[in-house]
Length: 354
Image (cartoon, rainbow, N blue to C red; front, side, top):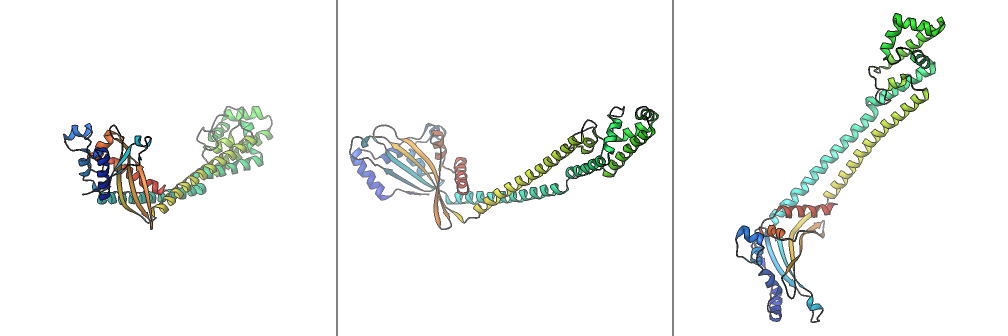
């Protein structure tokens, strides 16, 4: 670890000492450690000594700035003392590289997953069972509606004991003596009985040819479209509208899934493009400043983590604010690169690619 107090600052400090009896820098460095630190470490070091001995620092630099002039108004303004720690290059470079690699791998996985989701959504749109079922149900509806058999079938069972039965049970009922008796009673003439039986047969044959299941009581157009077609309470217009709405809903669901996958893929690609930039970490500095009043105790004014970055050949600096409470200072004085430092570093890195 290197401790560097630049000569011009020492001269400045001496000049200020001559004027004010104590340099502002010396005042800050001579401060006692916070109670949180002394309680745990029982140390007699001053604040300056403790900060200079941090293992996390490759180099420390102290400086002071006094912008006051001799006017009475300006003389009331506090001076500023700054402590700068260049954090361990070994540790910060390792953290930077590890986080960058993690982001690249994470967004590569997201891109691959998004592309798989899009392919799956496209496959569903062209081949999934609900879409095929709806198309088949529409064919059944149009076939039976055009022949008139659907209307005759519904008229046959509308007021019969079979009105709530499934198609196979409807056939069983009308094949029974009870069903035959019902036909003879309600249809009046032989021709009407024959027409009713023919309609039932036609409906049964077309539904069987469709392969659609009728073993459910669900009348939802999307879930059981064939029963929706055969429902006696629905008019042809209501059946046609229900099937159309269901087809639109299914198509919209597929389009939504596809669009969602495309958006996720676009975000992942954009992030990967940013992460592929030739970005290198020069160093990471932790900077603490104190406001030193003419009379009174110095107070921490700012605490920041500063990343010096090179994007290609262009230097760039990213600054991230950190805490200024006694507990925050206690973490600093613990000497190591803490979780707070790592979080600030990662947050600053995020600003680079945001």
